[in-house]
Length: 183
Image 1 (cartoon, rainbow, N blue to C red):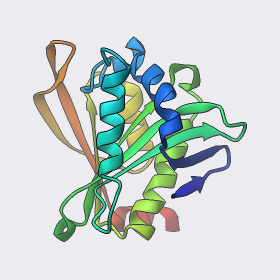
Image 2: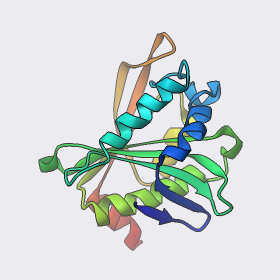
Image 3: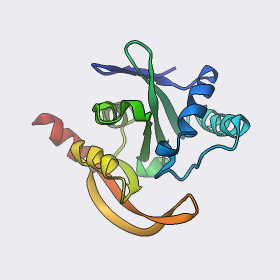
Image 4: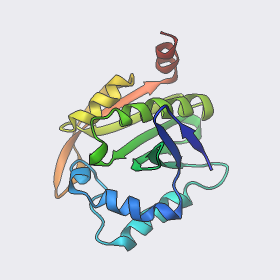
């Protein structure tokens, strides 16, 4: 099981005992506001998502990493995910969901910085991407603070709550990352 630590946070891969916290987080309307997953209809739907994630977290050609994020007192903060692209491209996409009680505390930024270290040093990726609804100002500010470059504005890409939202596409390259940490 992969675990990581920042100054204030612990990240560890999700486990079955996390399902109730995952369900509670995904059931919050504030968290769902810009999320394509949608609010789960019931616990069984959350279990299916959990099983899908964990099935892709197996084997040598791993495609998915999903981390349970908590503070040092073990209070649940949120989830953080990495989806690996095709091996030849050495790329991945990241995503995160922070519980509203923990918004505006710098946890997302702290976690993205830590995960970029994992992506570029441990996984030896070339490119890490992220996307967010154009209206999700907090999310794109996190990405920009962490050195991501906005590369795209895609119209009506995200199906969220019965409407189509525009998306900003962001990326950071290994050269960007290593030049940034040298400063």
